[in-house]
Length: 165
Image (cartoon, rainbow, N blue to C red; front, side, top):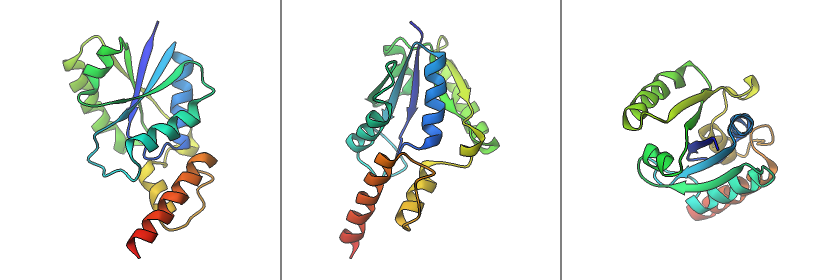
């Protein structure tokens, strides 16, 4: 069985993430969406909330599962008998960092390859940071995230505004 790991913080999961995930699910027998427990990004959502959103989005995909991981991605991937790590490349600006990480990961675990997938061109500009900012300022999120994620973003933003007032 060809297993791939699709890692990220998914804070929140976007249509760009989903697009990459759907194509990865066509290539590999099983894709594990690995939601990172550690992030220097100061996530808006808790780990449990992020995992719940991802699970909701992938619930109909038979060969996709959702787990959390802590520590080195390559150790986690090896423990899952993965043959690949899937990474999305949106723009040239992503390439240098992702290339560096892929080479480092290959040094750590030589038998696991990094596979780069580009999202559909309509999602190349999209990232979770932009989505969170649009949500914080009350913008329309329907083009960026599924409706279930949009609802959770609106609830989270409302709670944050109540806390700060």
